Image (tube, rainbow, N blue to C red; front, side):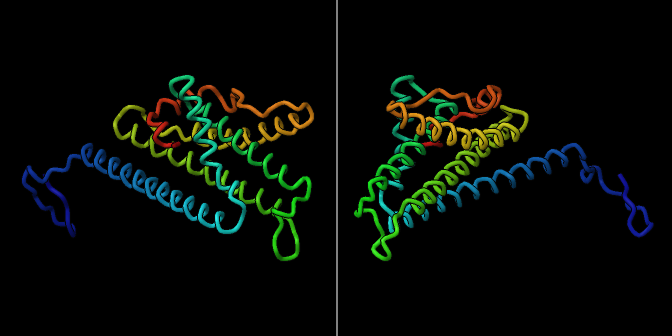
Length: 225
């Protein structure tokens, strides 16, 4: 094999021959590893963000707002005990129900102007601030679930179990979480008029293809608890 350097041909031994196909594969694998590492760092940062948010909430607003993750985990635990397992449909519904239940608790505390939940300075109620914190927790949860799904997909691609990361489905998953939030708040508003108890529904928010694809990623239980 020969290459040209400064217009002069240089002959190389056979062991210096470039395997273009091999180098291409190596480059692709290295790029996948870089992306996988980036996603892992993102999840790590999201985890730290969740911890910082929880710590800040505990020191600024009433404790009940910090119970979002516990409530979601409790709902999924009940589903697992009943069905033996849960999937992404259950996770989306559990998050929506948790948001609506905590939202209802906030409204319930303030509807009678209970002085126990007023700020010491100025007498302004915490209502708006608590809901803002609850919204922030929900956003953190959605970001966490989305990143974990992407990490799991990268792992499956790396193992050769799926051809590529289902980017479209992961983006659709994010939309489904916010649809669940709206759906359960609407259900809560209706329950106030009918007097019915706010319970878990089996909403299919998003396409069945999305759930089918994401449920194949595996290790869902480990990622959401």
